[in-house]
Length: 122
Image 1 (cartoon, rainbow, N blue to C red):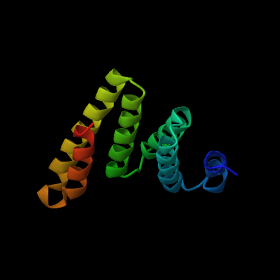
Image 2: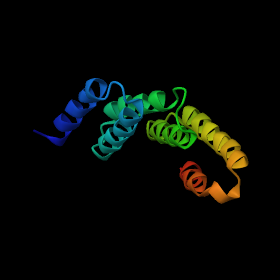
Image 3: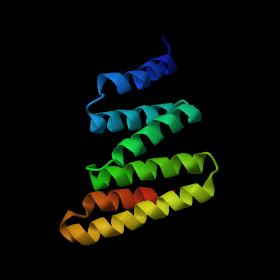
Image 4: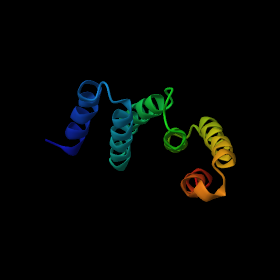
């Protein structure tokens, strides 16, 4: 079995084995998307990252996770030369980071700063 076949199989299994655990599905879909990136499989990466993005944007999701998925999707769009969409997504992530930092205050801003560096370093 090749790495790609293994990733394809795991991507399919996510929908059945973790049906009632959307956060776990989102994390694993993001990890699978990252692995597809290493293999330069951009269509597969896109499906995985969009799935993670959709799962994390559902009500009740953690803001930091939602922002991270937005940055991941923005990077994907940038790699696909979809610069306008990438810029919009990066701007959305940065705006949400600003809102999060205002609510949390400086003492809890370290995770936000990490994400900010990802969004501004593209």
